[in-house]
Amino acid sequence: MNNTVLLLEPVDLPAAESWPATACQRSVLGLAELLLKDRRSADELLRDENQQLDLIPRFLMIALASFTVYAWAMILLLDVAPHGAIPTVLADGWKLALRPALALWLAYALGLIAATGICLPSFYFYGLLAGIKISFVGIVGHTMKGTASTAIMLMGILPIYVAVALGMLIFGAPVPEQQAIFTLGLALPFIAGLWGVYSLFQGFMRLADTLPGGCDGKRYCFLRRMTLAWSACYTAVTPLMIYSLWSHLA
Amino acid sequence: MDLLNTSLVLYLMVGAGIAVAVYLADGDGKTAEGRFRVLSAVPFWPLYVPLLLRPNTPTAENTEPVRRDSACFCHIPGRW
View (cartoon, each protein chain N blue to C red):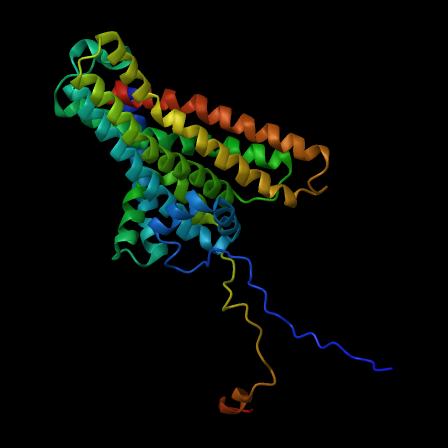
């Protein structure tokens, strides 16, 4: 009886594709792409304390650039709109001049990010209360990642919004409808902010593996509620911050 | 309104101090990104304070174990 021995040669399986953490991939545009395509890798990068020093200013850069583009698009639209179509919150201070325009830009660009600074201590407290292992720098990193995600989503929906608003202006839609669309425009960062909140929520949920009892315990549920409370706190503070800045500067 | 102006001045003074600290800590204030960090530290200093105060964790190259069987010991002058 012939015994045949099968020789099996090892086959190199392709490794799971992951984002190489090269300096190029972590440039500002590389990070924006990472936030769009692979947020898990962005969360993994944020876990490395040595990378946070580079990541946080780059997230800030993405957010500032995007909010600036958004604010100036809104300023141009409001400038060409008839006076009756200006949203009620802006109607008192808005006129075709440099000061209200700069005020609106600063209110959005600074307000959206400054609200993060105000909420940071409570964010850190919520994290500690939930029991996850995260440093204050980590909290800043995750918050800025959420803000940058909001900014990227805002850049995605802004062209559609501008097309609709311009269409209504050019084809002479009734003034109350124009006012409604401009009011919606002012709320656009908050609509885009839902994506940022979701990104933040996902990032925090991935930190659940640092919980003492693992992911299955009651603490996981508590962490989820804390993260939702976190998001509610930020959502409440931000419009107040923007309105305060606008009314002070305009 | 005066209270807001006074608070704003204090806020920006702290921001200027933090910006100097960021400049000194970074050491690359000449690149575009370095300049952005320093300038953005003035209005957004609460985001930079935790970065400045974080403990220095050793980088990968610093924590690389020394190979004691390495032949490079023979190049070190002195009692070796």
